[in-house]
Amino acid sequence: MTYRDLLAALLVVAFWGFNFSVIKLGVAELDPFVLAALRFALCAFPWSLCCPDPRWPGGG
Image (cartoon, rainbow, N blue to C red):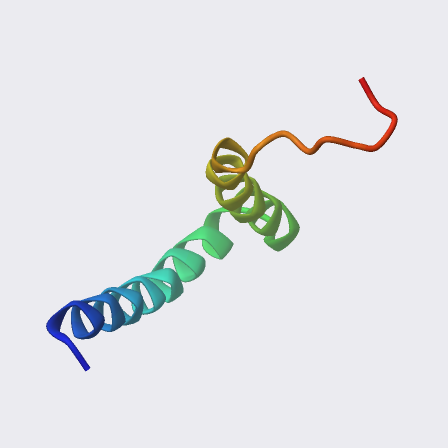
């Protein structure tokens, strides 16, 4: 495993661990369904900027 792979793995572990703290604080302040929707939106928005527009067959 290269140093780059090790750094990437450690970064994932750090984000994963930080996620639990955010969930604990978020559930104390927000309804769990609102928190889930907010987390989904925060993940979907950057993804939508990176994905190209789909070209549907027969579409404009």
